[in-house]
Length: 604
Image 1 (tube, rainbow, N blue to C red):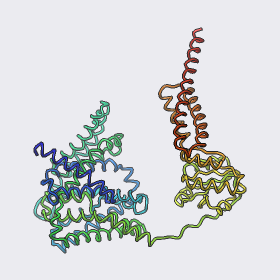
Image 2: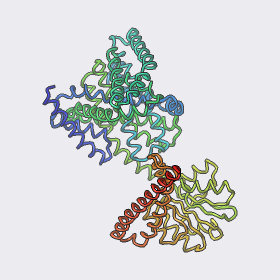
Image 3: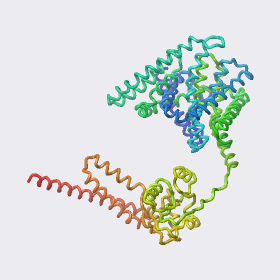
Image 4: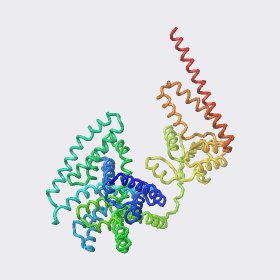
C-alpha cells in the first residue's frame, strides 16, 4: 500500500472503532460485536470506505497471535489441575458432541465432504471467550454455577483451538480421505522442536533483557519471542497462532508472566480489534439480502443445535439445574473468534469454498448479535420461573450476649475473632444470605436477619447486651439501624463503622458512643511507612502521624457543626490545611533544634 493509503486506512479504522465500540457497549452488545459492525459498515458491503479487507487481514492476524500468547500465559499447569474435572469433562464433551452433530448435519443435509464437515463442526463448536466472559462479567454471573461452568468450557475451547488449527493444514494435504503421515510427522517434529527450544532458551533470553534495566528492551524481547515463534511455525506450514500459544504456555509458570501480560496487552487489544474489524469487512451483507432465509435459518440452527448440546452437558456432566443450563446455553451458543480463524485457514487451504466461508462468517456474526437480546429474554423467563419465597430470619438461641455485632463482613469478622479468642459472648447478625452461608462453612456462629428490624433485636436480647457493634457496609442501613437502637435501647453503647466523613457526621448526629472511619487507621499506618521510607526516623514519623490524628479528630468535631453548609465546610478544610502546615513546620523546627543541641552535647 502507498503511504497515503496506509494513512487513510489507519484513520478510517480508528474512527470506526472509536465510534462503533462505545455505541455497541452502550446497548450491551459487547466490544467484539462493535468491531464486527464497524467493519461491516466501512467495508465493501457497507459504505465502501475501504475496499480490500485482505490487506488488513494480514496485519490483523497478529492480534490473534498475541491473543493466543496471552491465553497460553494464563494456562498454568496448576490452574488446569485445579479445574481439571470441569475443563476436561464438560469442555471435552461439549466440543466433541457439538462438532459431531454439526458435521453430521453438514454431510447429510448439505452434501459436504467429510474433511470439510469436520472442520466446519470443530469451528462452530467453539464459542467466543472475549464475548462470553464479558457478558458474564457485565451480568455479574462469573461466580454463578453456570458462570463457572461456562468459564471451564471456554478454557477447554481455548485449548482445543490449538490442535484444531494444527489439524486444518494436515487435512488439506492430499485428495483422499486419509491424512498424509509425512505431513503429520512434520507437524509433530516442528512442535517438539519449538517446545524444546522454548524450554531451554526463553528464560535465559528474558533474564538478559531484564538485566539491561531498559523497559523498551523487555517489550521488544516479548514481541520478538511471540512474533518470531509464530513466523517459524508459519515457515513449517503450521498455524502462527499455535506457535504463539506454545510460547505463552512455556512461560506460564515463569517469574516474567505478569510483566509479559502487561507489556503485550496494549498491542493485543488494538490488533485483535483490528482483526474483528477485518472480519466485519469480509461479511457479505449482499448474501444476507439475496438469501435471507438460508442465512437466518442457519443462524437459528446453530443457536438451537449448539444450545441443545450445551444444555445437555450442563445438566449431565456439569451437574447444574435446568435454568442454569439454559443460561449456560444462551451465553455460549453463538460462534466465536477462533471460528473466524479456523475458517479463514480452511479457506486458504481449499477445504471450504469462498461462498461457504462467507456464509459461515455471516452466520457466526449474526449469532453473536443475537446473544445479548436472547440473554435479556431468558433472564426475564428465569426470573419469572425461579422466584423463591424469601428466607425467614434465623431463630436466635442461647444465652444473652454481652456484644451484638451487626454486619459480619471484613470489619465484623475481625471484631468477632478478638472477642471469641477472649471467650466474650456475642451474637452476630448478617442480612446477606451468601455471607451467612459462607461464614458458617468456616465454623462461625452467625444468624441471618436484618439488624434494623425491631423483632430481630428483641430476639437477639439487645435489652440485656452491653455493646452494639454496627459494622454493616451500607451507610444508609447503618444509620437507620443506629437510629432504631438508640430509640429502643438508649442504654446500649453503640460503636459504629463509618465509610467516610459524611457517614461519620450522620452517626455523630445520633450521639453514638464511638465512630471509626474504616480506612483511617490503615491509611495512617501506610503514611507512616512512606515517611520512614523517605528517610524520617521512626520516632519522628510516628509522632507526626499522632499529631495528624489528633488534628483530624478535632477537625471532624468542628466540621460536624457545619457539615450541611458547603461553603463553611470548604472554608474549614482550607483553614485546617494551613493549620496542619503550621503544626508540621513548628514540629520540624523543634526536631532540628533538638538534633543541633544533641550534636553540641555530643561534641562536649
